[in-house]
Length: 80
Image (cartoon, rainbow, N blue to C red; front, side):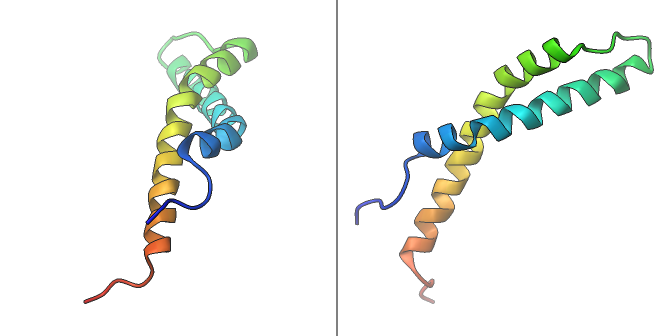
């Protein structure tokens, strides 16, 4: 059976802006929590930069998961 639909790479590229944005927000909030014990608060530029770096592998993992779910859905109902 051949794969139908988007590849993992295509899904990753489509979802990357959302993954990078979510990672940037998480980096900023993590720096706020870290500031409670005396750490520095990350600037906007650092948060976005780290978000872009962290967002790439996170989005790729999500895309793999979505592709696996698509493959399971294409198989149809499970036979018992």
